[in-house]
Amino acid sequence: MKVLCGYNVNLDAVYTITGEEISYLLKRVDKEELLEKIHDAPGEIRSLVDLVAGLVLHMQKGTGAEWFIYSGDVFHFLKRRYYEKSEIRLGGNMGIMANVMSHMGADQVVMNAVGDIETIKLLMSGGNIVFSGESVPQDASTSKDANEIIHFVFDFSSGTSFDLFGTEVIVARENRFIATYDDINTELTITPEFEEYSLEHVTEMDGAIISGFNQLQKCYPDGSGYTERFEKAHSQLKEWKERYPDLPIHVELGHFMSMDMGVSIFTGLSGTVDSIGMNEDELAMLTELHGVPSDMIQKMDACSIMDACVRCASSTGLKKIILHTRDFMMSIFRKGTSSPIREMQSMQFGVMCAAAFAASGKLPERSQLEDSVRGLARSEEGMKQTTKLQDLIAGEELESGVCGEYRDLSVCILPTIICEKPVSTVGLGDTVSSATFLRWLELYNVCQ
Image (tube, rainbow, N blue to C red; front, side, top):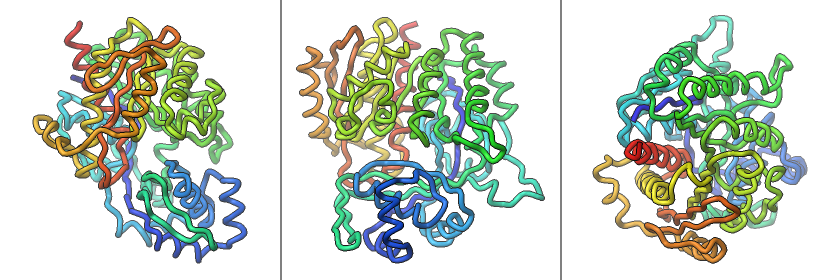
């Protein structure tokens, strides 16, 4: 398989946050200001109290999020305190997905190469990657900070507890909070080399997987918004489709700064790309399109999630949505665009890759994939939700999941394979999505 892969790659500094560390941070901020910001979340980091508010808020809920850092002081604090203690990994949706596909058997993965590519190359385990671009040069007159692409990823585990001014907080579910300092991916930078290479070779490609739209900002220092940057990338996707209409394009949505941005970009992409992937938090941001209460989605109620996905697809004309959660994975697609067996086999490959990565922190060789997850079990909650959905869609059992129909769309659901004590939750969504897409392309290619 030959795959085009854009747009974002960075360095992840992964740090497991403990109750003791949160207690340390709580002592460094004003109590009243913190409580106010927990109640009315800023959604971005301009001070230390913003950072602590984000951590506390999402540890309380057990939800994941990404907030951008707009303070050099906070960035330097994080770098001093956590960088040396962190595990430095390949980050960015594109970077992770390119590595997964290459490692798991893609013949060629063409990356939009931005940032410090020499450092990034050292973190990639896969081969057969074409780095179509160059490292972004650092202007001598520019602060070094402007070229940093470090995303501080705070992993937290279920059961972690800390005292919040007299109230005990116990983390209900493992997840991560990301504090991002990045002036390259926020511009949705596309290298001239990637533009030229993709246009010249698009007809030779088996598919394209795209991400990074969630890095866009509502407002930039020059006063402009995200629209122009989005449209530049969107135009590239349209041009690929014009030159090669049968090219399958999958987009990973990501967590946006605002619901308005998420809805706008999802709607804009739906008429161009073939499928969009997301998790439950990202689906909840699209409430304007589906109208399903966000609390039901974030509780990972499969029936509510399916209803929301079907409404999003129906209202925008999108061909397929791939929804990945901790406990189950779901595909909602229009008849004629795929088949239940192809969806189930590709999702099964994806959840095995994600489980293997969660258990060890690295991807196995493809020939050893099944052995690497043999000691792990299906999610009990995922199996419960699958049974619940089966009744609603009159589903039939297929592989390890269930397939049926709902409002003229095909629906497949598959319980995930759970690692109770994951090495890290970082990149699991990108791992499952890219592995699923790779296997789907393989099966699609066989049918042509």
